[in-house]
Length: 466
Image (cartoon, rainbow, N blue to C red; front, top):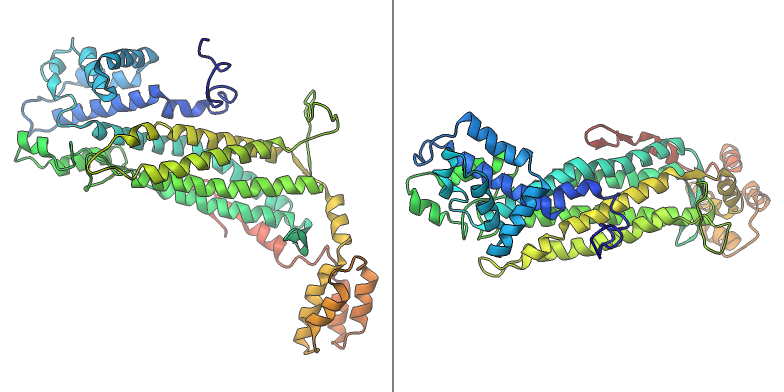
């Protein structure tokens, strides 16, 4: 079979290939080769711009432009040439070096100094910077906007539904009311914090040779400040310089980033399950599409498939994130290669995460509130007013308030408005308090829920609850 979305082994490249297409530019084999080539070229340019390394004269404007164009115009054909070279070398990074030499062989400025391509570098010098850029760019350009879309939708819904009362269900049982908007605001606030944590993580980078000590660098140019030079090179990519490494940059920052994704995903699993439950209770209806089918045998069905799809993909993503964040910071002695194949799966984990974000966003866009169902549930749960009644009784020092309300309501199925009011009428409390209690209903006993839901805000950059 020829490779295609229909024959792909992974559903990310098959069934869902269109939904995760934005990530291919960051995590495909082509993307990894292009990022590696970029690092190799920038390293060569940096060496040529350093006066202390007199063997490489500064490149002309034309040569610099030609080198830059190799990256700007890097094509699938270029990637295939690199892979052809790799079949001979059996080494993916060395293949980049040979491709670059071949691509610039007609340029006399570069060909004269071509042995300075990959100068004093180990493969991990190139790889760790490439991976840092892949993760940083995909986060900033794809994942944060996708997450922001969910947060914005939740905040908008929180405002619209701020004063829509809803029966809470602690332990799955009727409990003190809240509002639908406040429950959505709760998740929005959690995701805001996750967003901020994800944004704040800085990728680390190094370019310090075979075991992190600049051995080859100093053997060749013993009087040059290689550490400062390397630090400036790493910072050029908006990465944080790591001064202490073995052959590999130890990937702690990558693990932190993947853990941050995992924490966000856990919050979204919680959201998906709650919304699924509210749809099941009838609190939300879902919009329909013409010709869409919910069940192959039950024509009436409108299943919450978007939230189910999102939950399932979040689980796959988190399983991968967990292994990645536990594995990649561990390397035997100064280097082993177990991280190499594992790191190639970062895009898979992030791909399932992006897919889940999309499904959740689509699901939220289909929701419509069923206020009649919400009100009916509240009206059938007058027993929940046992909480405020016994609390006010405590204020006025009435004996055994909790026990009295427990006797009246616990486990009873026939708690009505009339029964609650009859109990209130008999209380020895100030008349003004009695009137206030008599005005209280399951629908209006919502505390500050509406105010809290209205208070949450989103900004263009960052978030604030103020």
